[in-house]
Image (tube, rainbow, N blue to C red; front, side):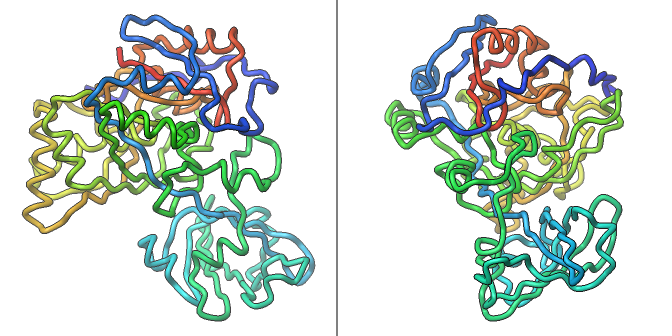
Length: 402
């Protein structure tokens, strides 16, 4: 095997600006649902009909990460404004430990107007004087090219999670071409969001209302959770013509042993809600291979699925993870993944996927193409011809693997 040669220009389509959903619909589950069946048929439905397409007993995986208000705004003494976008915790590096910090912590950040930041201490932009009790400051610790290490300092015993809630804004996607508004605080978050850490929402989950979730459970669907913290890399365009030159950023994920045991049985259909859940679940196979061959776990690298043939069954790989966790007294697998899913990828775990409609020339569109056996253009042409809404706040689809 070898790294596949994929040209990003082959994954382009015309997306008029008016087809991009700039705001969510008034009711979460009122969006359209495109169903792409196992026979490659395409039909239009309402999202409230989704439970009728999910077989009884299916394992349905949701990503329960929670978006944090990661955009912070500071001002130099000269009056220049500097935006700091928190990407991932640095010191301490574990999310919960960092969010629990009082008085100071460090993050890897993207800094807007970074050339105008001369190393002086910045003060949080506070035109109304409502944040005087916090007095949040930012110190530039290290420049690292596209990213920077920033130390935050503040007064009092307030944990950093509350500092973000008071001082930060939810980082809605840049293609919405607007500032964060009050509606985004609620609607750019899934109902089941639990673990703080993402800078972008797993948007396939935004459609799920409590009624739809209850109907799925009532129909005998086994609702399961994984957690992958979505990084800012999800917004990065593929700049090189050859996808092999595009670097994927590391994203941390957690899968509990009960979910791994259920998957290892291999006797039920697996439905993933969102591309983040797909990437998490498909990364598991390669984590198991690492344990089989080395006795240890390590992050899943970008091209691991393509560089060689793998003879182990999915069951063998998943059971290896379960046995490893039990042997080491752990109840969950915690790793990072850089996996990229492009045409030619061998899906070993996921059978069906709920997902939105993605940007042209994006890694997410590559994943969709891989999942539907290259039939993505016919699906997207149907969606465009039938007035589906696109991107994060847009309509939904249920795709069957080909």
